Image (cartoon, rainbow, N blue to C red; front, side, top):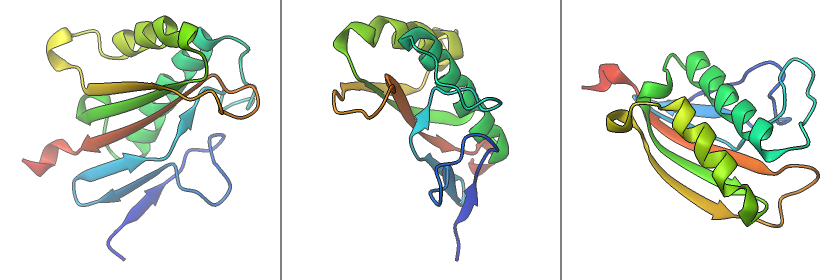
Length: 129
C-alpha cells in the first residue's frame, strides 16, 4: 500500500489511525481535546480546544510535519456558544495572520459524551514543492 498511518500514544481511536499520509498529503481523523497523558477530557470548550490543537501538533510531528504544513482545518463544536473559544485557540495555534490555514467551523450538536470540540486537518509536506 502507498499509504502510511500515524498514531500518537494516548490519542488512539481503537483501530482508526489518527492520520494517513500518501506522498506529501496528510489527512487526519478527528482530533479530540483530551489530555494524551491522562486521557481525561476537560469540562470546558476552551481547554478542549487548546488540547485539540496541541494534539494536532503531536499528530503532525508524528507524520514528519508541523502546524505550518496544515492547509485546512475543519472544527466542530457541540454548542454554538463555544465558537469563540475554538477561534481563540485556532488563532493561538497560528498567531501569524499571513500564515494561517483555511478553516471551517460547523455546529455538531450530536457529538457524543462530554466532547465539545473536535478538529480535522489536511496538510501538505513542505518537501512537496
